[in-house]
Length: 228
Image 1 (cartoon, rainbow, N blue to C red):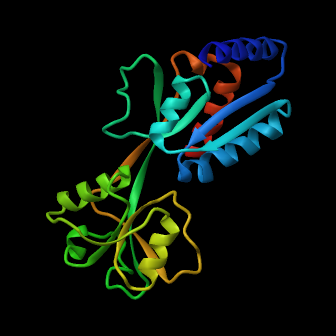
Image 2 (spheres, rainbow, N blue to C red; image 1 turned 90 degrees about the vertical axis):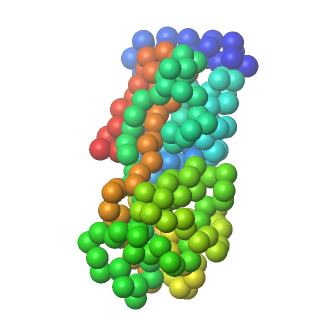
């Protein structure tokens, strides 16, 4: 529970005061964050602090906040969403990590494939592949299309970005995909930066005051380096 978690933190701080980071560090993140940020962060920490045991858990954003509050996690990488706790919520400490752009993904033979930048209005009348309605990325997609003056015609729904990429590769539509998402490299698709730079904000989050723990501070430093 939360009280036991505080005792664990105190014990780890004592160990850190003796000169070595040790014990468990529990981190959570949504799929892209785990793949691109938390996995390399854990590898770097293992190399530099072999007595520190990083434990990664892939969860969606809302569950990351729940686990932090319940004392089941020490650090999370989350996406800012309209339903997330506000930055003024003193239960948590949320800090900006990076602004991640969305790219337009089109088939390799699409007229926009050779562009340095795409205006989303140019694909206003094409079928779209979208995240599920409850996904924060669906909100970003609808907002970006709305800013370009249209409502996307959503024909296909996908959870995994590589599923989205395969649908695009077969000419079934276009999609907005976050830049950090790793797509299957051999697919005949092209990622084109978008005019207006639609993006999502990625944050680090700890419990209030949690960033002062030596292990958490070391993890935050690695994340900032990876995000730079």
